[in-house]
Image (cartoon, rainbow, N blue to C red; front, top):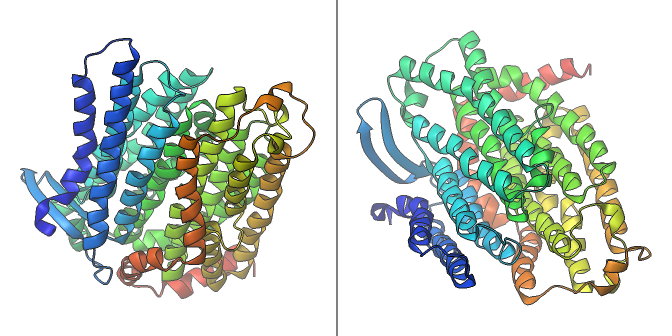
Length: 508
């Protein structure tokens, strides 16, 4: 399979589907729109099936990059180089798995410019897969930043009332954060004479102060993308105004690019700087977990509540990554994967009821269990998973992260664990006010339960949330070699150093 150029096929297959849609005669009739939807759906399904071949052919015991493809584009300046390890594979599979559901959830809700909408999502899929599989830092940057374009269009064209404001805020926040990273990439090229990630790792030889500066440059981009507190304010606005599928991709996939960036670049390129700034990351992560959980509790908009919940959950991700131990890194990866499934499901659930009532205000709901019992069951499962109930996938990532954090700082672990309690507070608050109580809105009395298309979307997500909650080994086995290899690259005595620094930081 190594010689099949599978990664290139998977990366550009959605783009081929987008070109096919462009060839469909454009008209205002329903047949043109239906054909566009069908092409997008089948393209995303085929892409997912092809990506399964990566999973089948992947050697979980080999920490090195696999399925490597390399073409010299500009000698010494840039190469077209793709490859994956356990980290990359997880996110590629998650992307290709969720994209067909994004198409399906938009099947009836998108009425205008359907062809352009489907093209935007297929182009977005290509750019996301390219980001996770790039082994050239310039190529990575091109894919990484180009993701902004289709997402900007999706929010700005098919979003809500404040779509233009939210789209520009999303674009400017994330773009400005990446300017410093581009400057750092140029420095790395000058220092090493290469843009290939593997060669940069081998050749990079810089002092600690330079490491710190470059680390901050990369941090400025990844922190915004994740997002970390206090550069998180663009996310709630983007989520609220984005169409349902846009919110799904934003929460499930795009946020993970920040965590992936820390794992792929910040830690292996700048180990000393990563250790130096680890106490800062711990503080920011804990603030994010506690503060955004409290903010989530007072939200009146369903989507905004889930958006703040996502920021809190990403706090566990950064906490796990910067523990510098294999358990913490595996916990962070599992948390990102699990959150991808759970947040996608929650935003789809919200999209389902929004299509019926056309309001996101929590106060406009209540008592929908009487008319939508099936929906209420699914929504309960995903809410429980979001608050890390044991037996769901949400529990595994947060548990591993807290255990790993405990090894370096008991105080930090206890503060992070408080976030689990807070998530239960706002999660149960949301569920109670939407599902139970007296019906105050007459429109609820005529609500219809899930249709077959909606059940088809939610059942696989529910199955995976439970399956990986009870049996996490497939994911952990997939990433164990890569995480252990990363820890070896870091060459830590940093474990003990980090413990001392955190004890000093928290005055214990």
